[in-house]
Length: 247
Image 1 (cartoon, rainbow, N blue to C red):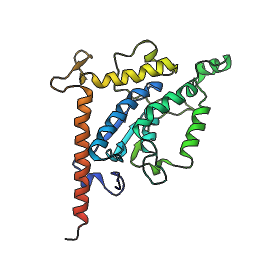
Image 2 (cartoon, one colour):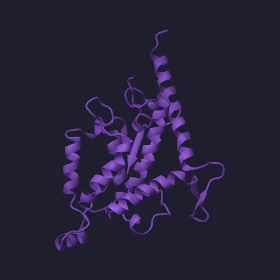
Image 3 (cartoon, helix red, strand yellow):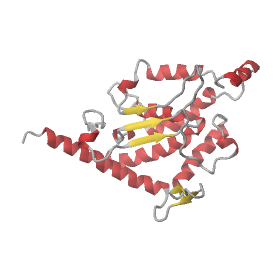
């Protein structure tokens, strides 16, 4: 069965009732947590619409900051058939395999001195890895629209975006770059536990996350969300087909 993305030929403002945006925060190796959540969401979309369904098929825009930008790129980079190069379930294994080399645990005195004046890591392994995976692919070729905020490395003026803090992150798991095997595996467990926790929102008066009554767990909320995404996507294609039907 052929699977379409919303960006193939649909103008969302014309055929959709709502614009869908997926925003993924940064945080270095903590990208394992949204990777775990994304994998669960995509699995539910596949249960509804078939094994070829991908997260990029359901969002008009996927945005990511820092490591969130890497996840956004993984979810939207095209293969030779113009389908997503990666499935969401590939994200966590990718992090487990490559993070120890992207964020090496030890570096010499010269690198330590450079870290005081600029980026902590030279990024050579990461750039080589990206070139190997993406080749000549360009941003304009992504399977849906992508936004990846960044900063000027020459002026060292970052654009900081932060929307979510997990109070369970402490010690090594709160680090963005402590890529020990134990810590990486613990981040996977945190992502899995987060699915089982109640849906929470910040109390604007106290600044504390509080459970939302009658919303269930994050896992249950994602199941409902997957159903909404599936229904919206199917309605989109029905409207498109009707608009192209000469009768």
